[in-house]
Image (cartoon, rainbow, N blue to C red):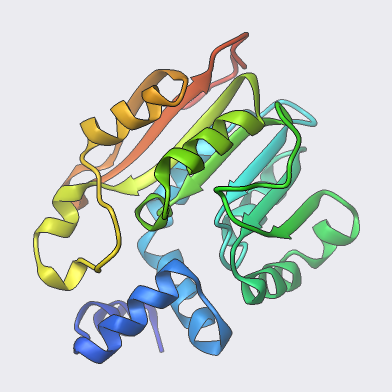
Length: 231
């Protein structure tokens, strides 16, 4: 199935497939999960590029991907950065898939993949120079715990990056909305992140017509000042 047909399939599904989409976007599993992570790679390509624009580029920085899926973004970063890359995802199947896709990086200990929950991450305090996540904020059962954890594991001055579709995207049609998910306007997400200790929070426009944005902030402290991205 080519990219055009894949996108058409995902966006024109009956109710039973919509229910499948809900579970697979939140926690991809099995062969069906592989299909949906491919779909996410297609839809989220511009957000992945935004992540690369904003991650610190210093040698040896530690970067965490929350919800790494099939490992596509981590693979891109590994090809371009001299960094220690980490990933956490709730799906064991995605760990298997991402490990296979990044076999060399994992074997040479440039990349470390873990199965776990963003609301209770198995990392030390102030461990990472950067934490990023793309299209996961809708699925958090307890957003306060999730953002507190991402703040906890960041070093002082560490960068936080969140790629997302704003609430307006989902409000266009019921087919984009799933029960139990939480959608945010740019203002709502910015205020939520600030409430959990992040500062210098800015919303970058990725694709205004598609309601795609990238939130960038930092944990209070000495800033990692190497952002060469466009404002």
